[in-house]
Amino acid sequence: MSSVVVVPYSAEWPAHFTAIREELIAAFSPIAVAIEHTGSTAVPGLSAKPVIDVLLGARVLTEIETRITALCDLGYEYVTKYEGAFPMRRYFVKSAPGSLRVHLHAVERSSMFWHEHVAFRDALRGDAALRDRYQALKLQLAADFAADKAAYSTAKGPFIQSVLAALPGRGQEG
Image (cartoon, rainbow, N blue to C red; front, side):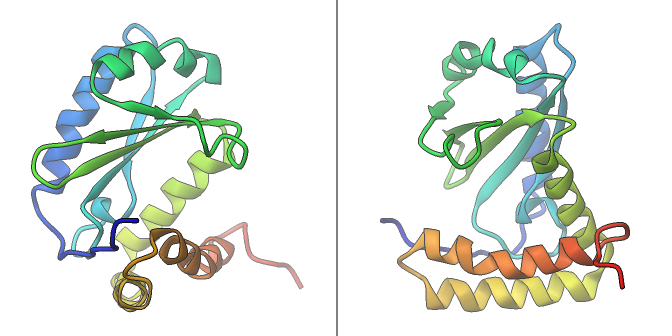
């Protein structure tokens, strides 16, 4: 298993996303899709694994499934092994120039997956103290789980869930 590497924020990440976005818009045309840069590389100032996480939202899952071959033709590898855990997501991975990778999460725009990923990104973008706490956690977990990406990702879960739970309309009443 490859190691967990967290690197300082790069101002080049948004440009990489823009190029990816344009490529995906062309691949899905004339289907209207929403495309968001999510994950840590989408948060200015946040250290991250060198992975551009892209969230692609379609009206219905079948609109995504009709473009699987087109995405594979663009160099995306369709990864089905997580569909048991995320049956309403189609997941693709692509190597990008240099050491960057692209993780494409394709879902319905109305899904909880879509809303939670955008909400978490927006929370980090809007609160420097929250971003800094998340960065400290990520750096600690990268050291603790340097050889285990799955454990690293799992260990971030409680923090992410606590942020989502604290968002307006999501907290517990009472």
